[in-house]
Image 1 (cartoon, rainbow, N blue to C red):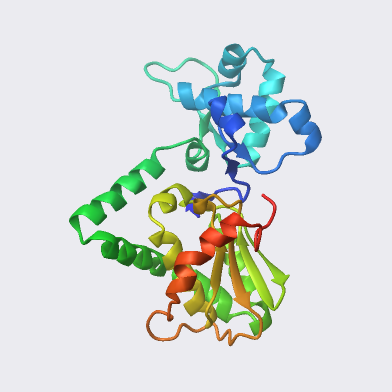
Image 2 (cartoon, rainbow, N blue to C red):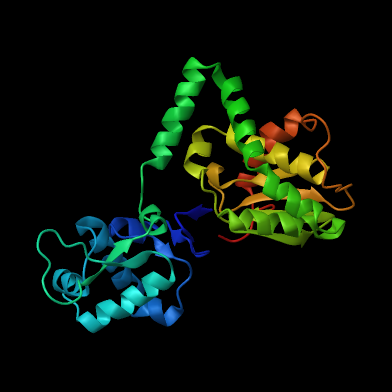
Amino acid sequence: MTHGTAPCSGRRLSASEELRNNGVVKNVGEAPQEELATGERSTRNRVARSILDHGPSTVADLAGRLGLTQAAVRRHLDTLVSENVVEPREQRVYGARTRGRPAKVFALTDCGRDAFDQSYDTLAVDALRWIEQHAGGEAAVAAFARDRIEAQAEAYRAAVEAAEPEERTEALAKALSRDGYAATARSAPVGEQLCQHHCPVAHAAEKYPQLCEAETEFFSRLLGTHVQRLATIAHGDGVCTTFIPRGAPQSGTSPPGPAPQDSTTQTSTTPSASASTAGRNPA
């Protein structure tokens, strides 16, 4: 999704425990092995964190706070600018301006600010708890989850309906990836697997599985066939994995009303998948 005037980089910031413990910005994408070995990424995270803590900063400010040379700071800033984590701005001058051009400062973009741990997960869980307690219990949470999916559905429908029947799972994966789910599609025995390697709502879905169930129902309607959720990140699996049977009538058009749900599948599939490695990718 986009934030502000520029699209966020496709490389998202990782939620690795090491980075969280260091109190730095989450790692943007996959860095080359030699970069990781030399600590380049860690230093770049420190640069971004310093801007978060102190506000828009000049190269000299950052070099002084971090004990780096100005040349090293500029090099890291160039990369952070290319990743849309920070942006250069003209420094605001209050009072009488001195001669010469104002110093350039670097500030976090909306994408860069979103890269840091926020309280969004807590806020989402609190909101769902309020809905559950004051607006109709679990059924109200399920209705919210379905409505949320439908609000995002148009781009997914367009992508699937524009693809050939045999390419619709792949088309859905690409559309999901554009929304931050890092999705892939691959062949499996008697079908395909749709794998989502990232889930933006995993922490909320851990407490409210209705979010996962609504997504599974939507995939079923979108692809015109019963699909089976084999594993979810929210349940502790490394990847959200959905099985789509081969030869299914993937019309790309949602049939009227929700797809019939197999209560046995809904309640027992994920736990059994979690207990084994069936349907999972290495994480």
